[in-house]
Image 1 (cartoon, rainbow, N blue to C red):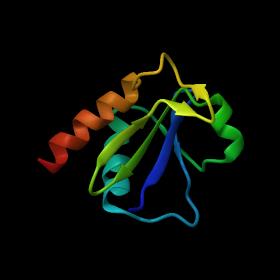
Image 2 (cartoon, one colour; image 1 turned 90 degrees about the vertical axis):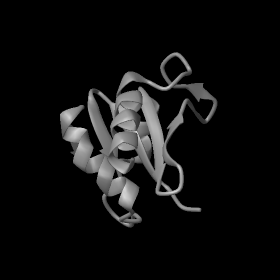
Image 3 (tube, rainbow, N blue to C red; image 1 turned 135 degrees about the vertical axis):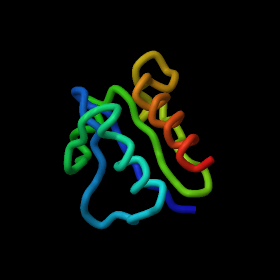
Image 4 (cartoon, helix red, strand yellow; image 1 turned 180 degrees about the vertical axis):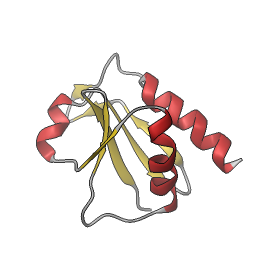
Amino acid sequence: LSANFFVVKDGLLCTATEDVLEGIARRIVLALAPDVLPTSSGLFLRDLAAAQEAFLTSSSRGIVPVVEIDGRTLGDGSPGPYTRRLRELYRRWVA
């Protein structure tokens, strides 16, 4: 299975823009995101240290929250408010 990776950093939704799978779930999230928070083009390894939230997307799984990266807990260890809101909107979109 494949997936795309997103992080919320400094109030922006960030995701890679090069060499990515242009999947359906990714396109839906990018279409929904402007109603939730601004997006930023590009995601780099150095951005992960400052990530407040993160999630994966795939057509088969939708939005899957990530609560830990390399042993570092994101936020309070549960899905953050932007991730929860996007997941809710995504579920409505595909229903």
